[in-house]
Structure formats: C-alpha cells, structure tokens
Length: 113
Length: 110
Image (tube, rainbow over all chains, first blue to last red; front, side):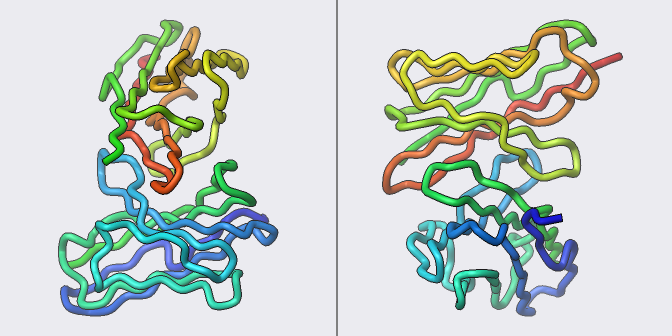
C-alpha cells in the first residue's frame, strides 16, 4: 500500500504528558498537511509543509504544538503538556502540488485523560 | 475570516431517494473540493471544481459550482446504502489554505 500512513493509530495519555505522532506521506508528494478533527466537525487545518519548509500555521495552533518535516519526507507532530481539549483525531494528508487532491491518512486518535 | 457553511447538517433518506447537500462561502473561491468520510474512516477526495458554473458527474453523483463561485452542491441520485457517510466541501483561498465545511451526514435507510 503506497498511501499515507500514520502512527500510532490510537494514543491514550494523561494530561500534562507529551505525545508525538508520525506521518509518512505518499512518496512523490511534496506537500504535507496536518489537520485536527473532533466529533461532528470537519477537519480543521493546523499546518502544512512544502518539502521541509513549514509554510503556514493556523492561528489556532498553540505554542504547545510543533511540527517538523526534517528531510522533506515523513513529518512529526508533537503536543507538549497535553490538555483534555486536545483529544481529537489528528489527520495527515499529502498532495503533489498546491490545490491538488489531498490524500488523507487513517489518522491518530488521541484521548487525553 | 473565511467561513464555510454546509446544509443540511443531517439528512436521512430512504434507499432510492435523491440527496443534495449545499456548500456556501462568504468569499469568492478559486476552487472547491468535495470529500466523503465513511463512519470511522478518513476523508476521501471525490472531485475538484474550478470554473464558474462548472458541472461534473461521477455515476450517480453530480457536482456543481455556482456562477459567482461562492457556492457548490453535491447531488446523489437514487441513493444506496454505500452512500452513507459525511460529505465535506473544502475551499481553498490564497493565503488561507484549505477550509473544510462542517459536513452533511447522510443516513440511508434500506
């Protein structure tokens, strides 16, 4: 399967802990996006990369969130000092070019207790 | 900021009935994309519309982009149980990246 993969698929953590998620995009895609989705809502944009450069971050993204894509391939999203409000599905998507089809991964479901 | 509205929020139909969801934006759009998300799944791309007044068809699905490029619709003819899921429109505007609507959740009763 050469689709977008995400790891882990599920994460349960205690409030105040740090968590890190990984996304492996489709190999020839140079754009990578992170979204957050809560129950009954559409995906909410967090940030995106073109190759290794992080080009945009949502104003909703607090300083506790950081994302990297060091070699322009896989990306990581870290949440520090997790809060219960961080509980959500974290989706990664990739595309070849701007405005092109986004291919979503299966997501990482985070539960903060 | 950019806002995306979708109506209805929920739609329950009997199998074989038609279904339409509408997407409206507060700004003129460069393009619009439609996605489907099955229960427990992730969004899957359906189509992209770019031109004013554009109409595209995929089997029983018909997608339209408004003449003013501020609204779009997805129409499903003769729904099937496999159509169950949430349908999202996603709008792209330069400098604001992709903004997803809240989605329309479709239930199809057999």
